[in-house]
Image (cartoon, rainbow, N blue to C red; front, top):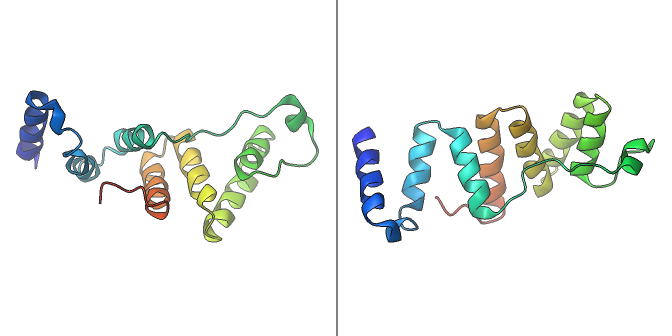
Length: 135
């Protein structure tokens, strides 16, 4: 496959207007090469996704109850040093089929620099939202 990648890269350098047509081939190359960080970053940028956890207001942080939204709940638990509860509520959201659970699961994996897990969650999220344009 390295020779194919070199040929694709050379072709795209000479023909930048073909970048869109080569998108799925590029994604498959990143997958095959296990370049998960590059893959997640490319898909995040292409789909204009926010794959970070929100920053909470001082009022939210001081509250004795977690916020209602999943991503904010996760941030709230992490701010208290309770990563076990944060990961549990994300796992429960994913198990319940909540799309936001997959997005937050990806954000958690990015935060811990587990790029393969981030890719797996992002792939599921993009497939569920019918935005997996690399299939």
